Image 1 (tube, one colour):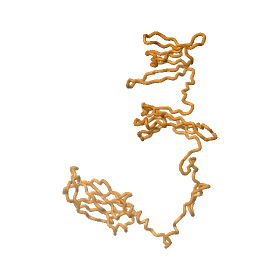
Image 2 (cartoon, helix red, strand yellow; image 1 turned 180 degrees about the horizontal axis):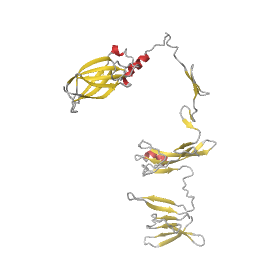
Image 3 (cartoon, helix red, strand yellow; image 1 turned 30 degrees about the vertical axis):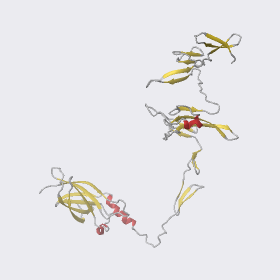
Image 4 (spheres, one colour; image 1 turned 90 degrees about the vertical axis):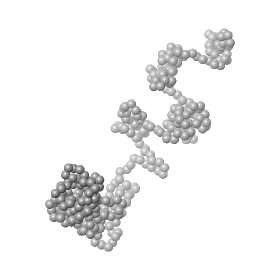
Length: 360
């Protein structure tokens, strides 16, 4: 006799979106020849029996299928009978599925949890012995004052109080918030994190996905300008979009040319200050005209000397590697005489120096 081998791939209930569990389950297997190749596109007779108690226990249900394998030797069968399956005591198991192909018995496998959806359906149909459909209903209530959640004729539990508060439009927190830290936060928002690697070192990210002509993202700083009037002084550290329109920004930014794609500090009111409080600290300005390079263009040293093109200024203003260019012919360099007079030095068309007394 030609021997077969059967590979079990799945046993499962098809529930889909049906209101009830069906009275059958799907069975799928792969039928193979003795050499392991699929028995493809062949008619086979498959006998399935339901065995109770043990793998060699009594058979309580049997059905037979004539089916055609597919190109991979697979067969898919619906196992079950509506009238009989309703009468099976699924709780009194275990149950096994025995399989025969073309009269050759190939053994049995235990059914696990899937077919027991049928038993669960039976449990849902159990009656409670009375005709009142409402006497099993219970009420779940919450006491907003004590935050006690209780069920009628049952237990209760005290709900934890959330530190977050909300109104119709906002959710807020009245304590200090710590992010990425294990110690008590010392500020309203206290962020600590060990950020390493070549990228993503920022601890706070603000992003505006709008790239329109008036789009920018900003970190706004506000303080009371007038306590009685409850008005604010406001400054912003901002970045405009690449499509920012200078004309559209005239009201807010005075139409600064080339303001698109610009990082800026907006400081209305009394202006903007840079502080370097260290006795060895300097203020430095960098730009670049070479890709992947950065150059220091100007420095204010701790003693107040300004260096342009040098990081070691020797005088109040020290220029290295360039000239001081004065384009206005009526302007020049103003010097003070020992007696306190002020003289502006300019040149004529022949390059001769002209000294003119002037008042500051």
